[in-house]
Image (cartoon, rainbow, N blue to C red; front, side):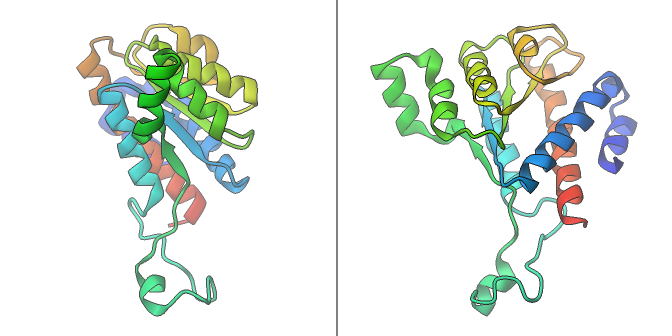
Length: 203
């Protein structure tokens, strides 16, 4: 995988994560081909990362993902020229009305679990970001995702954690301090987004 190899060249300390990164790419691309979507969650800086990842998936990242001749013939010329194909991805962190209501009315630890329960289907992929791997609301979301039959991916620091115990794939970057883990999460998910884009759209 070209973008993973480039990542390893730039960040050789991530070599132990390579297989997990490649497996995450395969799972996400396979979900797309089955009309699935990516459900992302995290807290604080990891919540911002969820927004960032969804932004790379929902429009062109390194390629324009242009509409091809003959596709969507009823689009007008302006839309056909400007619109880019997307990889469905929902940052659960952005659903503030539900998050605030459920936290207030029911239980804050289960906000992501509720969203996964409401939105998830078997062809989807759950992606949970937690620098410690032990965020309670993310872990509950992962557990519900597993029960519903979703593939589950975690991005954490190097230690074993609640998420690594639950998820199918855990990308454990070799740091433990929060900001250092986040600094490595960014190039990892950029590589994932770039490779998924290339595998799906061939550009």
